[in-house]
Image (cartoon, rainbow, N blue to C red; front, side, top):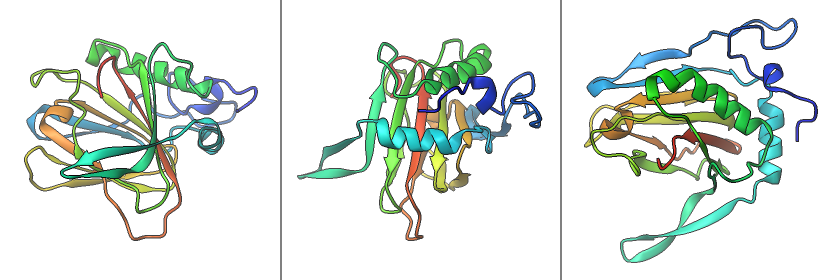
Length: 213
């Protein structure tokens, strides 16, 4: 746990200096419009206490290894996971504060708060997540926002139009914030591909509205 640290100390995000003597970060990440009404925001390195948070979550979260049906076989999910709902105690004191800060910023766009935290731990380059959209809990006409905080080793976050098409590759680095919004979960898919590069562990924290998975 990061003792004596507050949100103002660790975020390079807001309306004033994040810490004494530290440069003030932009209020909004850089937005890239995508096709079909989707968009993605990127704020590189916005979390100042990324090292401490990564180590605390890696040690304290009761990570779960899942198995899923894949055609005729049951296979290991290639990552460790843990989901925290809005009524649960989250594993680090900063996570609810970070979630509220992001939620407050996007509330005028989204119209509802971000209230859950889904954690994934990619142990090495062999861990991955396949192409998908976070569409559970929303109709095929309803937009939503998914905010991803990346911790640890740099990995590629790939996006492509739903049904196939040219993919976009984003670098997801330590302390980066990536927010997918508009129709992104309905009209695009995203993935963390496997890599043969020698990479260490990488963690993502996905903040979502109630019911969205």
